[in-house]
Length: 162
Image (cartoon, rainbow, N blue to C red; front, side, top):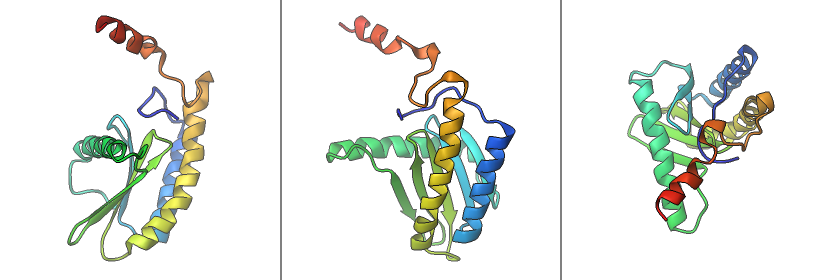
């Protein structure tokens, strides 16, 4: 899949499958909260304990964090980093890429361990990937297709700078 957001939407069934997967993940991992953020920085879903911060600003910063780390990965010869981990004294975050379109953010504290979060995240990502691939592919648009609004925009920009 290509990096970035596309024009897509969820059905009620999609959202139900997403929240059910995240609720099960939180129960099994003992994490506090799971947020889904698209690569453009839009908050898709929040499950678990409600954050005490502004989730909209958090989503934007999460997308920027992942984008910056993609560039760092390229500098050292990697294509990307598909997971990130930030450890604090009391709170930690584990971030995982889903199909190069969505980021799963897991907030957790001393009630669990990074190891358990990582193990349980893998199964949740597999389930969420199936849901998102279905949503991205709906309506005849393949998951890798660029939105029609942007078709040809890169070529036009390249012509301007030649």
